[in-house]
Image (cartoon, rainbow, N blue to C red; front, top):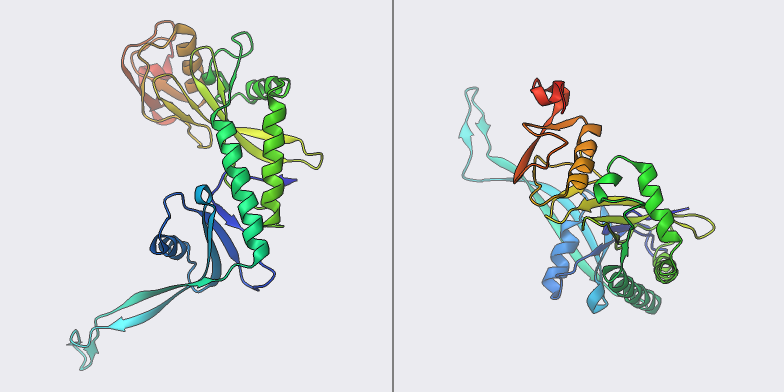
Length: 297
């Protein structure tokens, strides 16, 4: 299978160079100095690497040979006598960063142009595609939190829709073109697919991997409700400390409440049976003596 986490730092081999190489997307890079700065920011201490900085929207790829080393620098006027007849020098380590621009061969230019075009096309498709999930299947994005079977229900529903064919076609095309600029399981920025639920919450799924039969496997990355509250499904504790639950329906609030309990979390002075007003404070019940943790309502 080909693993495809949604990262922007891409490890890729270059047969012409016996050193490591990386792809880094920079959407705000336009000038040479901006490209160089990003290349230097991805330098690795005591290594020489190739950093390929690209702006997909402009189909602009620039390759740099990047070196990072250090040297000891001492202040010639900063020497002071010690108590043993010697001197104490004022010295420090100074990083040395260089980024030398390299030429691109024709095949690199062609493969990158095709790759960036496919990336832009798929981003446009995914940003314009929101899969509506029926209430009878899963009423709220909160129902996906900590519930892999519910997540599978959503993906199975999507796989049964005619609209998935175009998404899969564009996605597989994008992945195949990506493999041309990296033959080793490259990680590249795969846009998420949005799923919208009856309570106006949304869940976003990214590609996990593509199996040998070109079946695409997804994993959910986050849930955002109608108030803009975010549940980060990639985090060990996906919830932040405060949530604005204004206007939340009772079923949605109950879904959120169950999700909190599943992670050992609680909310002070609220009941699952009544939607609170305004902002709630979430507490960790694992080490709390709060009544809500001992006697959840």
